[in-house]
Amino acid sequence: MNDGVNEPDSERPGRVLVVDDDVRSRKALVIMLRAHGFEVMEAQSGQELLDGVVEVAPDAILLDVMMPGMSGVEACIKLRDNPETAAIPVLLITAVADHESRLRGLSAGARDFIGKPVEPGELVLRVGNAVRDKKLQDRARKLHLHVQKLEGLKDHLMHMIVHDLRAPLMVIQGYLELLKDDEEKRLGEEMTTYVDEAMTGAATVIRMINTLYDINAIEAGNAELRFESHDLTALTQRALSSLGPAGIPAGVHWDRPDKPFKATVDAKLMERVMANLVGHAVRQTPDDGVVKIAMAREEKFIRVEVSDGGTAIPPDQRDNVFEKFGQVRVWQQRQTYSAGLGLAFCKLAVGVHGGRIGMTARAGVPGNTVWFTLPLKEEKEVLGS
Picture 1: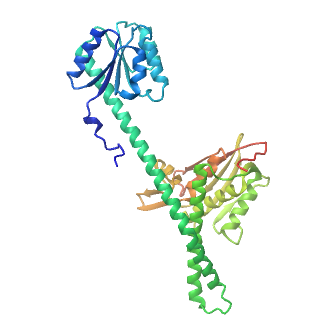
Picture 2: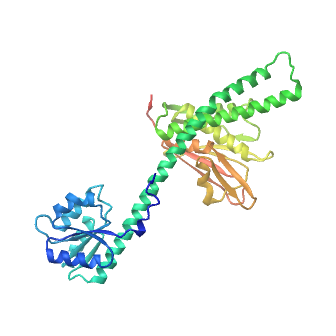
Picture 3: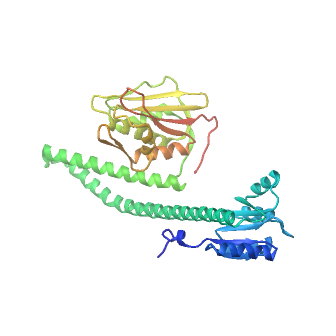
């Protein structure tokens, strides 16, 4: 199957449609262009051009301005307003060279002008440039569509794999829990430790699978969300509690605000955002480092910051950590900084709340700060319910 991406368009002669009501002028243009290898078609009016242009599919249109019935400028406007023909470069042939006439042509969508009497060298050069530009645009469009198709296939394959993985992983997790809860304690201390490690690994993979499901749902616009007014401090406390039995994991410093930080959010989604950000910061921070959480209320939004004590990411690579399976190579330390799926999920989740997310680092200070903002809203909203 040929998807058209590798079609040798650059080797195909340019296809030019010449439109002129004057037969002699039109034939002269056709002869000049064919002498230089162009494939040339003809039309004798603006209406004939519009009736056949989609079928002909030219790489460029050579259009006389002064024609009876429909002028070249009027035809150019109609070509521009039709999505099927808007990308075809139009070169207007005109004996009028004043500034206002050229502005009208450019406003109509013309790419270039060729003055009368037509000079063969100029004609071939301008038409050749227009044809090359059109071929480059066509190839870029085909590549874009091909990439979109591959992305769709990749997401579909990932969804299938994730769906098939969930069931056996849940079975594995269930049997590990049965082993751990064995009342007769037949495993012994060492084997119990192994089971604990296996349970942790299984739970991590299941969380990744659930995150992939959620990312796909948000990207597809299928996530069921309920936006209501919530206190971010309470949501953050619940998120921290989910990371460890002590309520605040070791090494995490949070000056909890005295007053509530109200925002219109989907509670479950925002709880997971905070858990992901703090968990990610903890993983990036050395054992003797500190993770800091900060909240501030600005004039029109709330800003939340989570700072780790790990290796600072170069400014030109910080956007990568918010992509699915984003990975950044920190060359100075020869380390790989992997964000996995957590920050990609956070980016999507903050986005559906109308907020922004990013990463910063301070010169001379270890670590990175992931921040996000949420707009302040007064009224309760219920969406997707």
